[in-house]
Image (cartoon, rainbow, N blue to C red):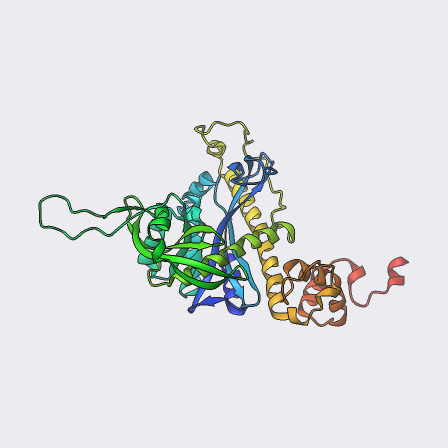
Length: 411
C-alpha cells in the first residue's frame, strides 16, 4: 500500500522542483507510549530545549520521509513513508529484513532512495545534522553504485566538524601513500577566511535575508574520506556549516534547499495535532511485558518469544501500528493536495477564526474544518458519486437502504 500511495502522489501532485530535481525531506519523530505490551516500544532519549518534555520516556521512534509539493506561494511536505526504526530488531530478524536491522540513519537513507527509485528521477534529500554520519554516507554510496546515481544529500554539520584536504601527490618514496591531507577544523574558517566570504540576498523561511557564505570541497569521515561540498553560512548573526554530496551544486542553492528542510517539522506537527496520526493503541497479550528499569546490556524481551504463532501475532500488531500511521499520512496528504488544487476557491474567513492568515492557500487544519462542515452536504447534492455507491453497498441496516420508508421502520 505504501508504494501505491507514493506512485499516486507522483502522478497527481504539483511537485516542487529545483533544477529539475525533486526534493525529499527526512527526519525522525518520537511518540510516547506507555503500553508495556506494544511492539517496538522502548526507552528513548528526547533532545529538547523545553523543560516540559521528559529527557527519557518509553515510546516509538518513527523515521519519516516526505516530498515537497506546491509552488512559490505555498509549499507542503507531503508524507510518503513512516516506519518504526528502533526496538524491532528481533522482529526484523524473524522476517529476515536486513535493512530494518540497521541504525536509524541508515534506514532513513534506504527509505529515501526507495522513493527516488520509484520516481526514477534525480532527487535531493534534505536531512538534519544528526544524519551526517559515516554509516549513512556508506549506505548512500553503495545504493548509488548498485542501483544508479539517483540521489544526493543536503544536510548540516556540527560546530565541531573536522574535514581534510585532498591527499598530496605521491613522491615516489617508499611507504604507504597518504589517503588524506591537512586536517581542518571548519568552524575556525569563519575567522580565518572572513575576507573570502561572499554576500547575497536570499529568500529564507519566507523572508529576504542578507547571507554571507564561503564554499569549499573537502574530504570527510574517519576511514571513509568522502568528498563533500561544505558551505559556511552567516545570517542573522548565526553561523552554520551546510553540507552537500553534490559537488556541482551552487552554495546559494544549498542554503536555500536546507531552509526548506523545516517543512518536515511542520508535517510532523500536523500529523500530531490536526490528524492525531499517532493516537493508536495496538497491543498483544503474547508480547513480553516491557520492563521500565531494564538494564542497557540486558537481552531484548522479544528474544524470549520462540512460538511461531506468537511471533506472527506480534508482527501483525507491528503492521497494524504502521498501517494506522500510514493511513493518517495519506489523510494529511489529501488535505494538502486539496489546499493546493482547490484552496483558491475557498473563503477562509467563513470557515473558522484565525488571528492571521499566513498565505492565500489554506492550511491543513482549515481544510479539515471545511470538510467537516461541507462534506455531507456535498454528498447529499451529488448522490451519484462513486464513493456514495461504495458506502451504500457496505451498509447492512435496512434503515439506510434506498426506498425504505421511515414509517415502516418505526412500525
